[in-house]
Length: 334
Image (cartoon, rainbow, N blue to C red; front, top):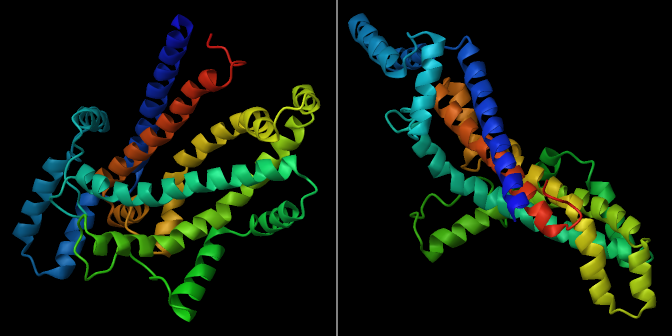
């Protein structure tokens, strides 16, 4: 137990280091950009209304002081970390004066609900089918399933998404084409709102499952094909051990361990893949929020989205690292 706690401590330090370096790199990249967020806002205000020069100058000074863009970059960096520790990255220019972190927390449930659910469902189905296909290589159904997986795996995600969108939202209008819920439905824990959310999530969710399950299927099938040739599996079969026990307790359990690392990366990649998904289906979430923040030059919102994304990716890998010694006795916590 002491060795495992030491292992957890080392991994925790690595987690903090990764988060610190990732967020610092994001801060540097955003502040090296030639885009001035204050001038971006003033340009939009000037284009929408005829403000006098004095009002524009007063607005420029107020925004500059608020965001601290007139201070040295080192001081801005220190102030950024002080605000981040308090959970306050300042107001968003995109939806002024709403705090940037509040916008992120509003968008987070949409991304997690769609992307994480789809990733976990794809992981379970793909690995289960891949394990059965690897253990039963001569089964016609699994052979056909493997051919289908290999045929759809190389297709880019956006192609599959657009095909589903055209077929099931325009030619056969079964599902909504865009959005997170119907405009005439009031958000809340009511059945009309929940059913509307589920209907709008079908096409993006199915597109993610179709593109994602092939990789899990092919990877698991290859792993199981190697595991079934191991001596302990052969011995269990000769000893008359129940087939379900062999498949579940010996084959799938041992073959799944390498897939857990891939699952951690896939869950972390949710925040990178969400941009394409949410843009294709106009789905409200972190990806849409990030694109809007970049277009507006909203540094606070970009840093808020990046901070949450980096933390989530590092935390997912950290959790899998902690599970490995518990799931695989061959991995020792040194």
